[in-house]
Figure 1 (cartoon, rainbow, N blue to C red):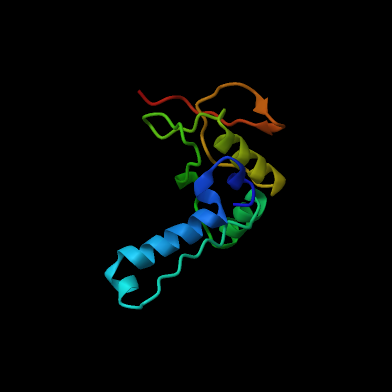
Figure 2: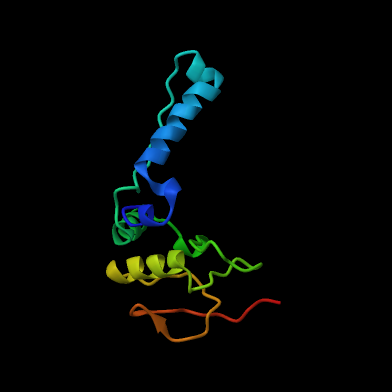
Length: 120
């Protein structure tokens, strides 16, 4: 999205363009002239806008995890940049983030972390 490009090279327009070029060079379809297009509609949206659009489309956000460091049970860490950006996006959209975080502390960047017991 519009914020992730800062720390995640694969979220940049140049990466998507290069990947599209690769797909057209490395696939039978692309080589035969059937040009492949990669669409990344979320790339230009803020996290808040993505949450709003997902809600409009009926996305069950409780089934999604943004964390790159989720535990063995799929629980988000609540501390990494991806978790913080997600929580801030839901907060900015005025929506509750249904993600369950491992952290059992109060809040980060003004966004309250939600917790649930670990499943062992």
